[in-house]
Length: 120
Image (cartoon, rainbow, N blue to C red; front, top):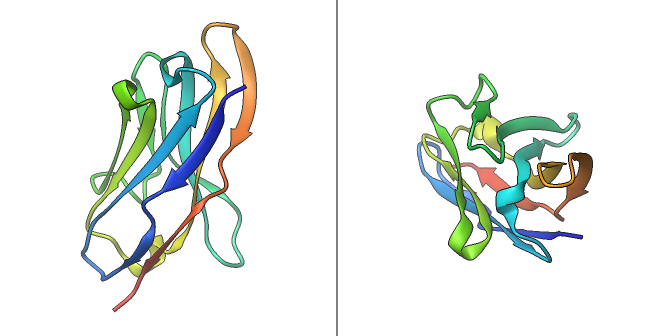
């Protein structure tokens, strides 16, 4: 079973950038479809970006052109590069595994989250 640990959150000014990391252990991420989700206070958790094992990507409209999801397979890590950050990007960001291409199974595995605060 893969375990996920997010890092890289913090306080950043509007217009700034952050890079989030999701380190995986227990299995290689190249076999999984994975995504970044976020949950702002008082709001539902929402999909931010997702990448499949075949490297297809998808983004929420609110982050298109500003966020980039990628994989660092050498370090078994999922990344989210966030730029031009806005106060409305403030949320706890979670990493999730939702599909295993090897076993052809749906999964629902989450990390503990990392807080991103965009404020001046």
